Amino acid sequence: MSHRAIAELLGWDPQKLSDLLTGKGGVSEIDFARLLGLCRVTEEEFDHLMALLKVSREKGWWQFYGADLPIQLRTLFEHEDVAKEIVSWHLALVPGLLQLPEYMRPLIRQWPTIKKPEQVEQRVKARVERQRVLGERRNFTFYVHQQALQLPVGGESVWRDQLHHLLRMSVRPYIHIRVVPTAIGAHPGTMGEFKVMKFEKLSPIVYLETNNSCIFLEDKATLDLYTNILTALDAVALDAEGSRRLITDIVS
Image 1 (cartoon, rainbow, N blue to C red):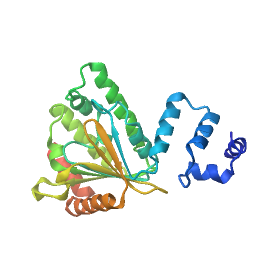
Image 2 (cartoon, rainbow, N blue to C red):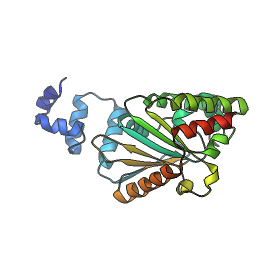
Image 3 (cartoon, helix red, strand yellow):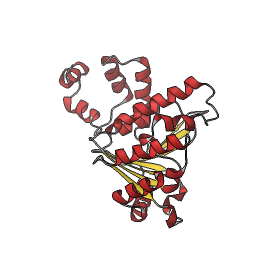
Image 4 (cartoon, rainbow, N blue to C red):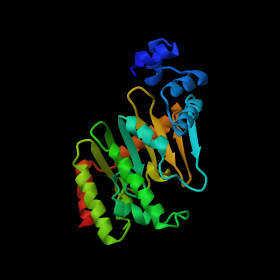
C-alpha cells in the first residue's frame, strides 16, 4: 500500500505518517500498534518495534543481554544501515567490519560461553553478514592502534592474510584506515574502544560495547567528549598513505 492509502485507512493526516517514517514526529503507543497491525508485521517484529518506541525519547539506551552478546546485535545493525558516516576507534583488534572469517573464529572460540563449533559458525556468519554495510553509501574511518595490527590472531598465516585484506580495503575511496603508532606512547584512546555513527536527519550516536551489553549514547556532553577524543586521535594518527606503509612494513 502507498503511504496515502495507509494514512486514509488509519484516519491520519498523510503528513503524520510521513513525519513518523522520517523520524520527525512521534506517535502514541495505541496509534503505533494500529499502524503495525495494518502492516501485518509478525509478532516478533511487533514486540521489537514497540520496545523501540518506548525508549525512543531517551538520551541513553543500555541493552543488557545476560550471559553474553547475542548472535545478531540487531539494534546496532539497524543504526549502521542508516548511518551516513561511521568513525570508530580500535585499541586491541582489527576492526570487526574488516575482519576475515579466519580471523574471527579464534577470537570467538575464546568466549567462555561458546562451547560448540556450530555456535562459532553462527557468530561468524552473523559478523560476515554485518559487513554488507561496507558500501559506497556511507564513509568509514577506522582509527586502529598499531598493537592491534601486531597481535597474531589465528597464527602467522591468518594474521598475514588479515593485514593484506586491510591493505586491499584501504584503497576503497570510502574506507579510511588511520593507524596510531605505538611509538607515540600515551594517547586519548587508551580509555577504550568506541564508535560514533552520524546520520542525515538524526543526532550522532556514540556506541560502546561490553562482553554482555551495549550502550547507545546521544547526549551532548557525551558526544562532545568522544568527538574531542577523535580529534585528538586524528592529530596523532598516520595519514592514509602512511598507515598503508606501516601495515606493509608489519606484514613484511
